[in-house]
Each structure stands twice: as C-alpha cells, then as structure tokens.
Amino acid sequence: MADKNIFIEEIKKGYTFKGESVQIGAAILDGEVIKEAGIFLPLRTMNRHGLIAGATGTGKTKTLQTISEFLSDASVPVLLMDIKGDLSGIAAQGTINDKLTERYQRLNLPYTPMAFPSELLSLTGKDGVRIRATVSEFGPVLLSKILGLNDTQGGIVSLIFKYCDDNKMPLLNLADFIKVVQYVGNEGKAEIEKLYGKISTTSTGTILRKVIELQQQGADIFFGEKSFEVEDLMRISDDGRGIISILRVTDLQDRPKLFSTFMLQMLAELYAICPEEGDLDKPKLVMFIDEAHLIFQEASPELLQQIETIIKLIRSKGVGIFFCTQNPMDIPAAVLGQLGLKIQHALRAFTAADRKVIKQTADNYPETSFYKTEDLITELGIGEALVTMLNEKGIPTPLAHTMLCSPRSRMDILTDEEISSINAKSKLVAKYNQEIDSYSAYEILSAKLEIAAQKQEDEKPVSKKTEKEEPSTFETIANNSVVKSIARTAGNTIVRSLLGALGIGGRSTKKSSWF
Image (cartoon, rainbow, N blue to C red):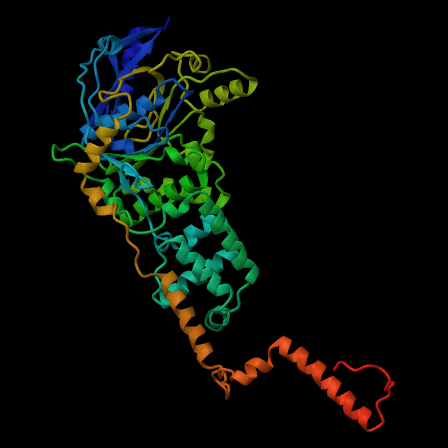
C-alpha cells in the first residue's frame, strides 16, 4: 500500500494554486476518498482548453455540468453544446437524495441545490434564441474550406465575393450565393471575364454541387439574418454569476458537416472580435462541446487545419474550449496536444482494439507511483475520473484518481412549460427571432436579369403589320376546310365541262355527269 501522508502532501502541493480556484472533488487512494486531498481547478488556466472523456454512462456529461456551475459561480460565462438534449436542466434547481448525501459526506463538502442563470439557443429558432450568420460573414476563405474546394475553385469564390462587394450586393443566405454563381457561369460570364479574367464553367458547376450538398444537410436554416453577435455569449446575470448559454443541437447528430460549419464560424467570430489578453485571472468565456467527435467527423483536411489553428490561437483571447467525447482518440493529435486539463472517466475493454486505445490513453498521462493507470482506467466508478491539469507555470499536476462533485442543478431536462418560461423572459429571443428578408444579391441580380430581358425584347425589329387584323366574313368562310373542299370539287367539274364543250375533254362524253 502507498504511503497516505506522502500522497496527501503530493496532492496538496500539486493542486494549490495562486489566484482563485474551485474544488471539483477529492483524491482517492486504495479505494478511500481522502478528504484532505482536495482537487482544485484554477480559473487562471481555464483558457488552456481541456478534455473530458469516458465511455457511455460513466458520468462525463455530469462532470461537464458541474464544472459549468463552478464557472458560473465565479462570474465566468459558459457556452454548452447540448448534443443529446440533456443539459437544459442546469437552469433548474436540483433535488437532494441518498446517493448525493453519501457522496458529499465522503467529500466533506456541503450540497446546496441551485438553479443557474441560463439562456436557451437554437439553430432552428425552435425553443430558444435563433442562431444565424450571413454568407458574407464567413468570407471566401472559410466558405471554400467548408465546401472542400481546391485552389482554383476557391479563387472563383473569392472573385464572387469581390464582385458582390464592388457592386454592393450583400450575400446573406445560400440562395444569394447560388444566384451569383449561376450568374457568373451564364449571363454574367462576359462581364465577369472582362473585369476579373477568365473563369471555368466546370469550376462554377462544382461549386454549385458543393453548396447543394451543404444545403442537403440543412445549412439553409443557419445562413441568413439576423446575424448572432457572439458578444451576447459573454454576459453576467444581475446577481453577478456568469450566464450559461445552452445551444441545443440534438437534430445535428446526423449532419456533421453542418455542425462543423457552425462550430468553425463561431470560433472564427470569437477569435476576430476578442482582443489579445494573454493569461487573465479568469477566462472571458468557456465553451464545452459535448459529443465532440461530430466536429471532426467527415471534416476535410483543410477544415481540420482551420479548427486546429483557431484552437491554438484563441487561448490568448481569454477563451477556453473543452471537448467531451467517449474516446480521446476521436480528437486529432494536434488538438489533443493543446488540451491542458484532462478528466478521464472509465473506458471499457471489450476488444483488442479497446485495449490498444486504453494503453494509448494511459501513456498520455503523467507517470505516478500511486496507481497502475492502464488498469485503473477500466475500474473507475460512475462519477470518478483520473484528473491532471496545468499549473500557472504550464507544468502538469500529479495524476489523481478523483471522486468528483455532482451537479447542484437538475440532472434531467426541462419541461416544455419551463422552456417557454425561460424564453418568455429572454431579451435575446426578442432580438433574434424575427424573420428578416433584406434586399440582397438574389433580388438585385433577378432585377438586373429582368431589365436585360425587357431591353432585349424592346430592341427587337418592329414588323410592318404589328397587329394581326381580324379576318373578314369572306376570309373566314373561304378559309373553312369544308368550304374549300366543295369549291375544289365544283371548280373541277366546271373546268371539265368547259373543256368538254371545246372538244378537248379527254374523257368519253357518254359518261354521265354529276348534274
């Protein structure tokens, strides 16, 4: 058995920080929760990102919820990506039960049920604040990466944005962008080539197909007005707590490209508007992304590179990003290396592949003489995790088998009535949930094409008989097919009679006539 006093001393030394910190649990040694060995989370390093990983049912989502509550208490705004739809309960007060009482007795901490100031967000506008962005805000580079275009096609997208800027044609939604692409490849091709150089019709066709593919994943609901201002994510409630914004994206699980599109735009916008801050006493915003593998699933190499770059740079803006996923190997190595805080819940070893992942995961944690990490990962109980993080000097803290605190808010979803009540009080719902259809590129080009078509019609040569005259009664009768047939028969008979009278008829005169 390990020496308990040495263990306590090492944990205390590793988890004592300058500045404000919050206790998220207590270390466990040989199955015993050591009350004196508290595990603290320093707010100063929360901009260095983090990972919460573990198999289904091990408690990682509740860990995410607990840390969000502590941050809110410390006046840090939080954004939660709620993929499974089970995080809305953070807006309601939790209830005490025997399991919670026992856990907090073992931790030697008080448990006070509490609701937290929350805002419900939605990409569709259903049951929350509508989140949208315009095509113009994406810009040509980001849009090209999302569509997976090559350099030539990306150059045409840049040309399209330039043309729209020069002609004051706003690109608000995908209908605007499609209309311009169609115009560039057809009616406006000569104009575009005269101003900006030759373009390939094949390339414009490829761009159109890529946009339609994005539309098929439901991107139309995201592009448009009124554009969401990311400053509204960084708000403090009247009682001084950070507001927790819960973005419910339960309908995006089968549309990874749309989810990646939204996430990349959100991160890019945050990076653009936030000034350089360095390491603040506490972050300006912390974002938690549940089921984080959806960001990287089906993402192109260019899109992955863009995400990795933003994650590396955004920490200096005072923004922290935490990924929550079942398998830590779901996160690209370049991103995983940027995650300072690691909370590893239990993993299951059902197959040889599972055992390989567990070994790789154990190798990513600091070495310790107190645990056999590879074995312990499969033995962790619900609400327990292996924890390590970075201190102020960027040095990893000792690996600690930890019993974590549980949420003080409801560990379940809100009712429809509770959701309606939150939205009814929300100032952001009134700000963003109105339909706006501004005059943009689609209407401008449609009007331009209509004027051109009318001008072409007006320039056609005018016929001398511009208006067809009504036929006379004689013309009407004469043009009748029956009348024409009778006239032909009568005419032939008269002619034959006349020729017969002159003796040149050609037929026997003995033949009876029709009369």
